[in-house]
Length: 311
Ligand SMILES: [Zn+2]
Image 1 (tube, rainbow, N blue to C red):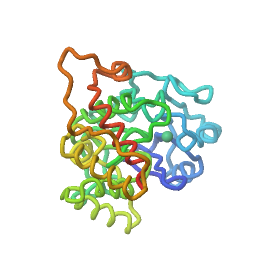
Image 2 (cartoon, rainbow, N blue to C red):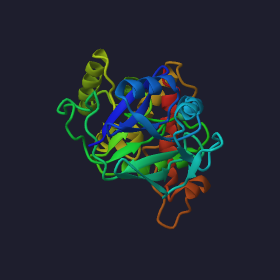
Image 3 (cartoon, rainbow, N blue to C red):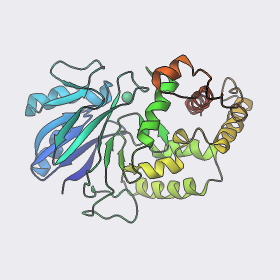
Image 4 (tube, rainbow, N blue to C red):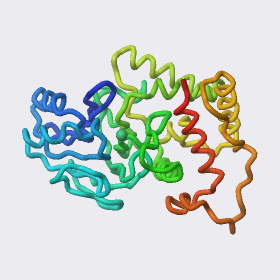
């Protein structure tokens, strides 16, 4: 049974690693040293590198790892990446450690961002368990997602290159994966994301419970990740921007932030907007990303802006 292991790197990145006791694969190595140290300590050979997007904190270690190990690298087709990276597109797949990882294009954070997903993969627990009931060595949920900077626990990536419509469509694809899927996000942002989510929904009991557990994990020096699709669907505001109660909460928080001088302007009301009828034309950017309702894109964009301006 392959093992899943997060290698901490830079200030708050995780380089996710999978291994079978002999061969290892790593995802988004922003640094080479922590990976080389880990390979040496575990006596593993680097068999390959997967990339999700071009940002330096996800690719900075690629050149040194290739020089040291000659491991092949797979990355997105539509991103600026070093020469020699084997390019993959939506629907492509790659067999590794007994699983088949599919490429899902998820533009938004960057223009050509991809995620890697394996439906049948059931890795054993990493050194840190994703929830209190799990223990090292037990099989974690089934299904594994390496989502780069698209989906975070209780958050999502910033829109550096893509549009809100693209990001919403990308998150919709990830949210549609089976609930037990393990979500391997690449930053330890969970507690900071929870601060925003709880300002938005102070009375949400699930968020309060999850925050307590995440605080315990961090106090013990453990990651809060991986998460699961089921948990994110239930708690993550960026996967719930169509819920009327969440839209109302967003309106209230945005108004309060403007009153406190923390944000420039309150978003136009979204809770009261009525979806257009079936014959109405979607927005141009919505049409490009998916068949999205303009009001849904508007609400998602307002949520993203509110988080960006959150003190
Ligand atoms: Zn990034």
